[in-house]
Image (cartoon, rainbow, N blue to C red; front, side):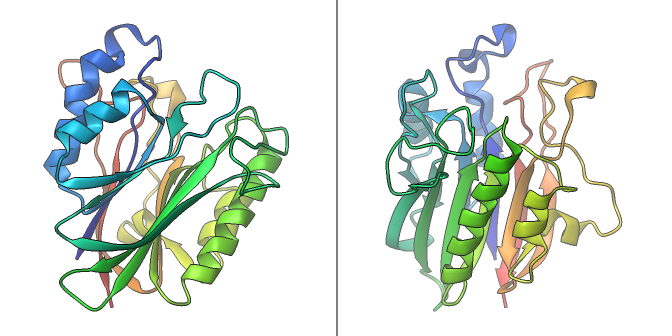
Length: 259
C-alpha cells in the first residue's frame, strides 16, 4: 500500500495574523507525521526558511522542488514533492511550467497572474517490482483558460507516463469538480478521483476553508490515480487546535494499492 498526501501549506510570508506561518508551522509537520505518507505533494512552499523548516523536520523524506520564478512576490514558491527514502529509489525527476513554453523557467500564458509549475518524480518501489510516478501542481486562481490549458499539459504528461508507470497526481487546482478542468483530468479513463471512489454518492467535502470560514469552502485539492491502483481509503484532515489551523487548506490523504 502507498500512503499519499496533498497539502497546500500556505506561503510562509503571508500576513495571516494569528494564523501566520510561525504560529502554525509545527502543526503542519505534526499533521504530516500523524498520517505518515509515503508520497507528499505540497503547494505554496517557498524556497526560503519555510522549505528549510520542512526539510529539517522531515528528515526521512527526499525533497524535490523548483522555484516558479518570474518577477512577482511569489517567485520563490514551489510545488515540491517529498517521498519516503526508505520506501523508494529515485529513477528520474523533473518539472515544467504551466504555459505555452513549459520548458522555459518563469514562463506564464493564458492571462495567468503568476508563473505556475508542475513537479514530477519517477520512483522504484523498494518492496516490489512496481514503479510509481507522482505529478504535483498548483493551478492559476484567476484565469479559467489557464486552468484548462494547464489540465491539457498535465493530461499529456499522464498519458505518456501511465503507459509504463502507475501514476498519482496531487494538486491545488483552484477550481471545483463541476468544471472542464476536472473532466479533462479525472473523467477520461486514465485517471480517477480517489476521494470520490472512497466515498461514492457522498457530496465532496471542502479542502479550502480560509482558516475556518464557512463561506469560503471549496473542494479544490484533489488526489487522482491511474487505474493501476485500487483505493483503500481517502480522507480530509480537518484537524485544528484551539482555533489554530495547519493551513487555509485541509490536507487530503489517501491509501492506495497497485493491483
